[in-house]
Image (cartoon, rainbow, N blue to C red):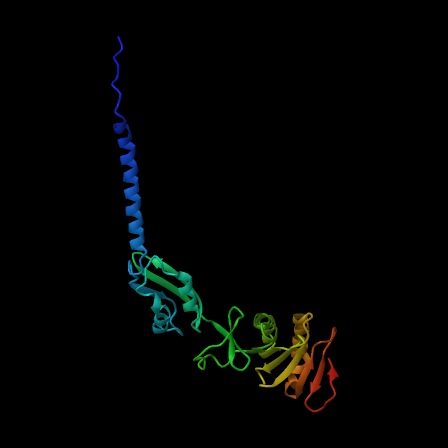
Length: 254
């Protein structure tokens, strides 16, 4: 004999789903309220900024001034890219990286500019071949090479210098100046470190290293003894070079 189940009242059948829905709604409101509070400008203020770098040219005071506007702002809303740009805007900073450090700190790591050459009369070239303007640069080494060229060519000129300088150094010659002319030829100022004599070399952009090597070998064999008499050497020839002596205006072949 089957027992009949009493029907559940309609109100009771809807009560449980409504309670679940209400609980979900309340939890959502609580979550949104919590998130809103966390993202409020005054919530979770940044407390401390830690800097990591060489501190040879860049001072902690300069770095602190660059990121001062970030201190006290919401840790979660902090614009890291904006802080990075401010740090990298400092003249002696080459690159910077910025990250959050829990619970409410900021970590800033930076690399200083590494200067390898003069660029024109006032600027400098860093290790990446970028021309930069720098304050307080009077104490840099005096024997840095002097490079110059049309705007935007600093990397090209530095690369050429790095290619040619060892070639001359092997024969006791120091490449002091390298200029890329508007017509894309090279003008070099070379010092014989043994005699102190200086003279000018002219190169074109075609096979410049090969032509420099050919001259360097010939210089050591035949020209070094007369270094003080050399005014200019034109290396743009395919199979030789022309020497202009200080005592005559007529170039002699080599």
